[in-house]
Amino acid sequence: MECFRILGPTRLHGEVTASGAKNAALPALAASLLAEGPLELSGLPAVRDIRTMRQLLGHLGVDSEEDGPSLRLRAGNQARSDDAPYELVKTMRASILVLGPLLARLGHARVSLPGGCAIGVRPIDQHLAGLEALGAEVELEHGYVSARARRLTGGSFRFHVPTVTGTENLLMAACLAKGTTVLDNCAREPEIRELATLLGKMGARIQGAGTERIEIEGVESLNAATHRVIPDRIEIGTYLIGAAMTGGEIFIRGAASADLAPLLEKLAESGCDLSISDSGLGLSRPTELKPRDILTAPHPGFPTDLQAQYMALMTQASGQATICETVFENRFQHVPELARMGADIHIHGTFAHVHGPTALSGARVMATDLRASACLVLAAIAAAGETIVGRIYHLDRGYERMELKLQQLGARVERLAAEPTRATTTP
Ligand code: EPZ
Image (cartoon, rainbow, N blue to C red; front, side, top):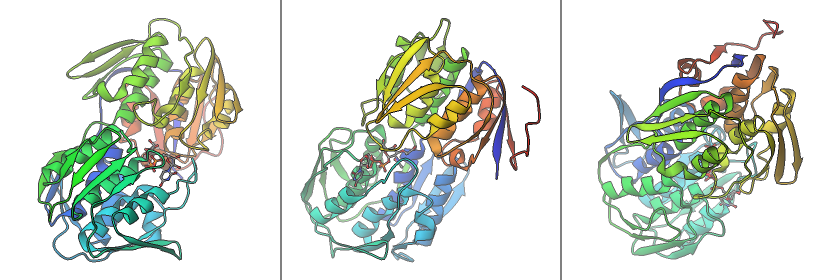
């Protein structure tokens, strides 16, 4: 199984370019089911989850072909299947994003329940309740969701909890419903605003995306469109944290600051110097790192997808920082792995208390999920000696060519085809 071998400590310095946002690209790809096409998407990141979604869409009858930097998708007027099988859905929860579009376009859909994952149970009850509010008949049987509706009808629905993919599923379904839909307590992540922009280009009539209330006036059909995916704010945040953690200096071309305010505020408060320009974001850290507490929350709160990376950063701060994870129930799995590198972290329920600064030392560690793996890579770059990060298939789901970007920033990272049986260098 592939792993990363990292030698540290290294200060990250130099320039990299932000990749497209995985969590904006996935709903954009699913939106191809809503129209005959073609839908042309550019800026898609070359990561495993995007390949998985293309494979699932192909199974459903959406043909996709690469045209230079773009991907052209055509759903045509006949779906090959309305069935999203377990074998595909179990590898990527975001597969559930085909449910709303399939139901809206075909009037029926059968999608495997995604199942849980390392960070939590990840229910989809709000997706299903929302589709029922639009007139769908929904049944759960043999691990699958079966949904039918001759034609969805506009309605009102209030999410019990702001759910990103739940909001995206309902947004896409409501575009082709008969009548107007009002969604309340919607997630407000930038990726939702982006999806609404794409749907608008396809002819949808949407007001309020990015706020907690979204109104959608259903239309008879949607059309072809061309769209570029926004930069990945979580990838950008990950590299900014890496530079802050190692006392380096980097510039991320194409990075936008608007959607990263909660992280940028914390980095500035903890002693980092930030530069914001039209071409990107820069960071240096001239002084010691001061500890700053965070509490993760739906946007515009501190993103849960940067919690693990921020925890690695706080191991280098002079004092105690408290990190509260409020979104997912099991998102501290990186803690025991950081502890193997010498980190001093104590968990009490949803709180993690990080004591620093700690001189991390290289060790063999194991990635457990996408963002935990990024956290361990950053810690390994700051640590003295050799680190082997195992199960980096988690990382490949959402970070484009991470070892190449880190090498560009001066890190000593290499991808090995298999984990070595013993340390290959003495620290
Ligand atoms: C999206 O997941 C992201 N994935 C996640 O990114 C991200 O961590 C998460 O939003 C929160 O920001 C994509 O966009 C593909 P949720 P999603 O539904 O939509 C509860 C990454 O690392 N909930 O917003 O699946 C749920 O239990 C990934 O890139 C219900 O109770 O997350 C959780 O506590 C990880 N019922 C909370 O809402 C539902 O029907 C937020 O989950 C749906 C969700």
